[in-house]
Length: 95
Image (cartoon, one colour):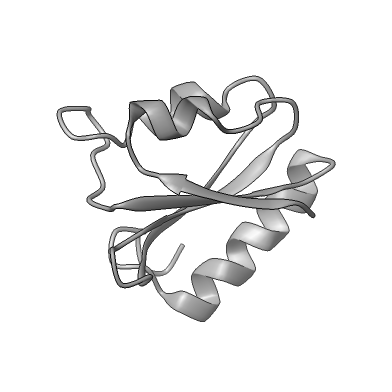
């Protein structure tokens, strides 16, 4: 799976590929993961923008890292594994 890390702002998000489902990690300046999520192909930019300041699902962070998947079910498995390993502060615990 291909990975890419960009600044967590509108211009950084626009640089990300949108052609496959992704697992994304919103990270602090020091690299700690604040949130892990997935999104479907064609909705990567919109979903990440929902986490920017002033949005309904705001999550603080300075970087976003994506990992592309071939299918949504593959992304879900990777998301669950990432959540169980890093226990991000902004993910609902016990999910």
